[in-house]
Structure formats: structure tokens, C-alpha cells
Amino acid sequence: MHPSAAPGLPPARRVAAELAAFGTAPAPASATDHHAGDLHSYTVRSLLHLAKATEDPDTVLLGIARVLPRIGETGVVPRPLAARAGNLLEALFEPADTAPAFAGLSPGRRELLSVLAELLTAEDFQSWPFGSDLHERFTRYGLPGTRPALRAHVGLSTEGEDPNAPLPDPWAQFRDR
Image (tube, rainbow, N blue to C red; front, side):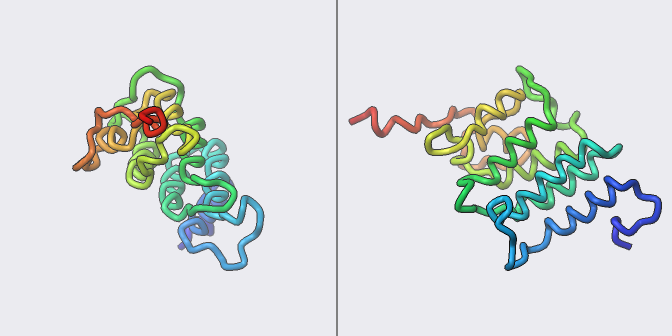
């Protein structure tokens, strides 16, 4: 039985289950212009709001983690996954000076960070004007602010990457002239 049809399931959980199921499927060809046509990104945003309204937010967060790989580039938002990651961090973490122990996080938060560590690129962490503000957002919440450091934090391979290396200076090529 599909979770959204389960009798007695609270409304927020039913809606979240239906949105998560929709978000893991390919977007319909006749996608709306709403949210720049990026229905998967919009689904993540909607699920995030529902996570706050349910008594079991981890179930919703696990649904979000399943939708994240479907978010694609749009003509409006150059790095939509980075934008969604920033929204997730803001909603799920408190500002901190040090990284929370990965093992001490809830299962939903652990899965979200693992999926983000898998999907985000080094360029997503690069500062403006060539990237996003993800580096600043991650470090604001005490989380590692580079792709290799985040991968090391969640226990993924960092082969060929130095988790302790700082972000490269995007202006270096212009200063060296």
C-alpha cells in the first residue's frame, strides 16, 4: 500500500509521502513555468515546509534526500541544487562554530548531508561570482565548507581530493597577470 493511502496517517505525512513519490519520478514533459519549470526543486522546497509540520520530520527528510538527485539545471537558477542545499541547511541546522558529530545527527539529517556530499560539485562551493554562497552557508552552521571536507565528514571517499585544502581563489588567474 502506498503510504499516502494508509488509513490513519496524519495529513502532513500523507502529503509528504505523495510529494516524495512524485519527486523521484521524471518530471512530466508538460511541466509548468512555475519555479522555472523545475518541479523537482519545487518538490524539495514543498517537502521542507512539510517537515516542519509533521511529528516525524526524518521521514520527510528521507523523502527529500530521494528527490535531490533529480534536480537539474534551469535557465533561471544556475545552480539549483546549491540553492536547495542552502535552504535545507538554513531550515535544519542552527548556527555553530564546530561541526555537529555526524553520528549524532538524526537519520534524516545524516542522509541529507550524505546525498549532498555525493551530488554537490567543487564549483558549487566556490564563492561568487563563479559559484554560490554554499561555502559560507555550510561554515555558518559549523559544517565543512568544501566538497572534499564534507565528503570526509560523512564518511565518503575523498580520493584525489584534500579535505583540508581551502577553497581556491577564483580571482587568482586575474591577479597573476
